[in-house]
Image 1: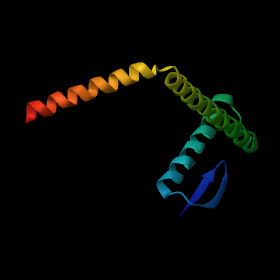
Image 2: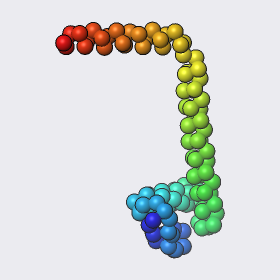
Image 3: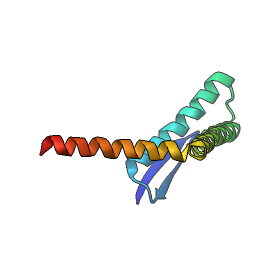
Image 4: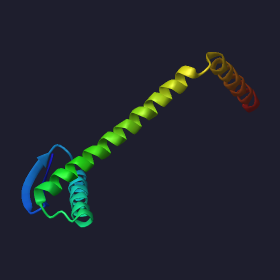
Length: 107
């Protein structure tokens, strides 16, 4: 468990969390960077609006990453389901044969 002092958008408070301090520092820095980028690019100076937009942008990134992970998992499952058991068996037999030949050569 670690404690970090949060200073963002004119607000300061202490945060305790079960994660390690370096992780909390990365999260804090990331959020500050998102807020800074919003204020620079959109010219928004209202701190509440900046915080809400930052939360929405980060949630958007999270959902996109989750979608990518789900698609990758589905593709892997589809690939595994489409694999030919006879090809897998043939590959296993070939591997076994090669191992036996190597063992004999090493004897």
